[in-house]
Amino acid sequence: MSATETPLLEARNLTRRFGGYAAVSDMNLKIARGTIHALIGPNGAGKTTMFNLITGVLPPSSGDVLIDGVDVTGSRPDRIARRGVVRTFQGVRLFPTMTALENVEVGRFCRTRGGFLAAFARIPGVATATESATRRRAEELLERVGLADRRHMLASELALADQRRLEIARALAAEPKLLLLDEPVAGMNPVEVHEAGELFKSLCREGVTILITEHHMSLVMAISDLITVMNYGRKIAEGAPDEVRKNPEVLTAYLGTEAAA
Amino acid sequence: MLDPYTESVLIFTGINIVLALSLYLPVSAGLLSLGQGGFMAIGAYTAAYLTTEMQWPFLVALPCGGLMAGLVGLAVGLPSLRIKGVYLVIMTMGFGEIVRVFFLNFEPTGAASGLGGIATHTTLPGVAIAVLLTLLLCFQLRGSRIGRAIEAVREDELAAEVIGINLTYVKVAVFGLGAAIAGIGGGLYAHYATFIDPAQFGFQRSAEIFIMVVLGGMGSFWGAAIGAIVVTILPELLRLGNAQEWRMTVFGALLVVIMIVRPWGLLGVRR
Image (tube, rainbow over all chains, first blue to last red; front, side):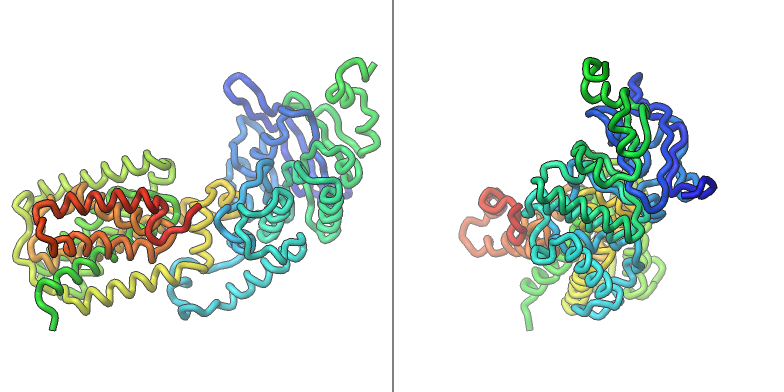
């Protein structure tokens, strides 16, 4: 990106305190369009809190969040989703007693229209044009993440790796410009991790910018354009994978002081 | 022709189906209410006042009662967003009591002595139409964009919110819609009972509606309808035996047995 282009997402001096404890302090983050940006750090470094601040789940104690240069600090999560920033959760949050297909269809909510009156006015038993389009799109997305044959299973019946895929499909249904993935490959086997990495790269090629937190370092190193490292709620390093890998502060944070010496 | 007793049982069954569905709607978004009796009272009093004192035609007065209950429902629905689970149940209980005490002291509708002389406008075909329309409404909602959003809110509020569902809109709308239907049920009731007083819409009534939905199964509107039928007809069937004075005791015991054998409700899905 050129130096003058507005970043897709910008966090300025973002701080969140819980009582006296600062989970995130003074974080600055710029996410460029069309990149895969990784946010890494040891457990408790504040990565998930950052996600909560960006998506409006938690209000920041101070600082601003800008999407496309527009200040969205303090906006409700659904407004932020409408602006094109959609996330997944570390502990997978699906709609358990709905089918895989229905889960993805719900994701279309903010990109379709029709309230109560539209629901009552339709011919009983016949899907409207919008509903058929929603279904088609949902089926495409399930195909995309490899769940087409399991679309009528309940979300709660799927294996963990499939649940993670489904959550990504549901997020994609909301047509995000920026997709936030919170540890999307945790609990997956090496083959599944590889497939997920390919999926993220192909999504990025299609124009979905991705912010990912992950402990799976080889995946992070393989797919990221830029890596931001956090520790104790602060940014301690930022750069391309090769720079970050050699950064002494990062090694200290991950491995302790001996290794850095 | 039906004999008057059978007809009255069927009419009450129909009214109860409407009331059970009025509670099913907020329940389908995860909002439990023990205050449907209050909304029913607002609809009953509004419609009855309009037909008796203002001489409005029944078919205009009935929707007005529903509208009034719906508007109050929207006002009560707003705080319900911040209150969850058992606290919401307590809040709606409080609301039901407020409505009851309001009508107990409200002179224009007869206060404690009640409102009498209401013409009998509620007929069996009329109730049947109301039941069919309410069932159709629930059926139409299922599988629609807004219906799926309601389901998603019940399943996981946070997940629903972060993919772009406006929680405020969904919850308040579904609560208000349920209240309006309870108001219609109240209007139908008033124009069959011909006399209403605040005691008829107290906690007992709200709890009865609640039982219908839980008994039938909270997962589907058919369940709520079946629950209403069972709760209305079962005590009447028990009259057939020769233990009249034990009728309600047996009824209560049967409810307990049903809930032990099928805790997910008669038509509900085991989860």
